[in-house]
Length: 142
Image 1 (cartoon, rainbow, N blue to C red):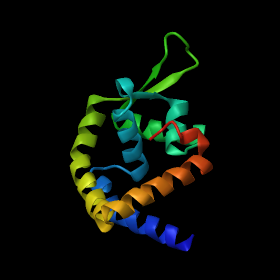
Image 2: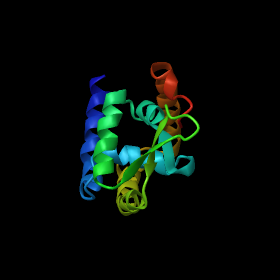
Image 3: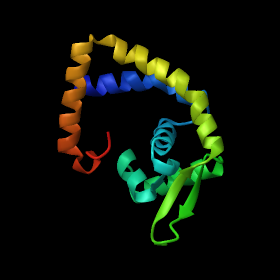
């Protein structure tokens, strides 16, 4: 477990400047990426909480920050007012677009290029098995 924690901390240390230089936290970067890949560039708040591993109050605070910065808006489902969505704004999409090239380059260098392709494939397969066992609610999320 120590090796896993050390690896995670090392990767975060290498990736953090790529989102911090664009005024984002890692959690904010994660949320913006998930919203950008979702249909209509939006997710129900409960689904965003599940995908980010946050509690409902945690995702509320995250979306509050993103909304204050003009990166997302909240929208109520007119068909079911119990559902609230976080929707990526044009400003949020632009901020993400500015950060992504540097972020992707860092992921490529510090994660993908560190392993031969067969080892990377094996690692990803093993991580999916662990994720599916530990977070079954996240298995629909790839």
